[in-house]
Amino acid sequence: MTQSGFDMILKGGTVVLPGKTTQADVGVVNGKIEAIGDLSSASAAEIIDCKGLHVLPGLIDTQVHFREPGADHKEVLETGMKAAAMGGITTIFEMPNTNPLTTTPEAMADKLSRASKNPWVNYAFYLGGTAQNAANLGEWENLDGVCGIKIFMGASTGDLLSATDEEVGAVLANGKRVVAVHAEDEMMMNENKKTILGDSHDVTLHPVWRSAESCLSATTRLVRLARQHNRRVHVLHITTAEEMEFLAKNKDIASVEVLANHLTLYAPDCYEQLGSKAQQNPPIREKNHQDALWKAIANGTVDILASDHAPHTLEEKAKEYPASPSGTPGVQTLVPVMLNHVNNGRLTLERLVDLMCYGPQRIHKIICKGRIARGYDADFSIVDLKKKDTITNAQQLSRAGWSPFDGMEITGWPVMTIIDGKIVAAFGALKQPGVGKPVRFEENRH
Image (cartoon, one colour):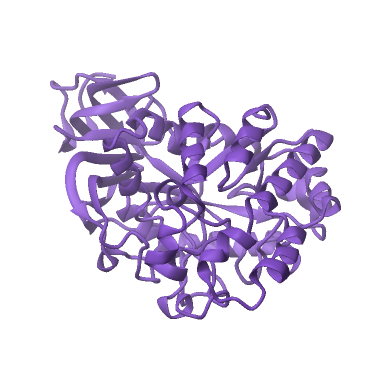
């Protein structure tokens, strides 16, 4: 095509492309990336000056809990997606532990219908894998909007808990899509709760009774079962040095996720400062474990970085431990917290894009998202690496209304979120709703 007639041109930004970061213009037509390079002679309906800014592929948060249906007082899909858009996230994958559980085609269809009413960002949903629905998973995993299968080996309730090898094996034996797993050993933790926690209400014991050993046990069991069934697994929110050492040797069958919280906060300080507001599963652990997570980011063991946005109200979190629920909000703060780490030299901006774009695209086989390349969807997260601001509870658009990072000074902020060639958030304000669409995956292309 001639260099004219673009719908949008992102002009003069530093663009993170596969394999290189360079100053370039990006031209958009009909929601797709049409041209990358010098577009100074081109015209466009909308020209966005990106000088001094970095243009990233649309960042993807592959683990959020938006609580709808069943716990709407904590969050709904619309408020969760608004928080994502404001935080520079263009696509979310939401978890199945809602009420009812997302374990049937009917529950999946209901979530897709709810999300479509006012989608601020792109969306897909995990289908919960259980012993009860295992026989159907090979068929159901290719339903529209399904990003993969999710198993809870620990820390869930009712039918969604697959604690035993038999239950996990039943899920792994059916289907081909990636299986994402919460790997804590339920049996070990139940024993620890009696012997270690007992009647104590001390939140600093959270990482002791939900021990590193219970995580390593579940993860090693999972990988053994994955090999037995020749099924790829994606191990979520790894928190321990021992697991990272083990997983580094098993990359052929297991991919690895870490969370911003575990990279940023550490025990016992976080519990002393935040109390149960730092309580999540698996727990935030001591500094030596955090150091191992950073090492695993540096050496390539980690594939994906996510928020595990899991909102609860402040009233709920104020309950006496351990009655206080585990989980913290994070979809809106994930990008600024990680950009602050980029500025502090903990990882490069390119590695961040790898963890939040290329990794999700590769592991989940996402169609046309996750990179700035001709023909891909025009989803962009534009960031200002020099912008300084402070995270506050008042900024949070989540219905929960708080952040464990309240008061944290940050250098590096998302300043514009573009989806499908349309601005959905810019410079602290939401702009255009209804832009997000269900994510498409290679396995269920029609």
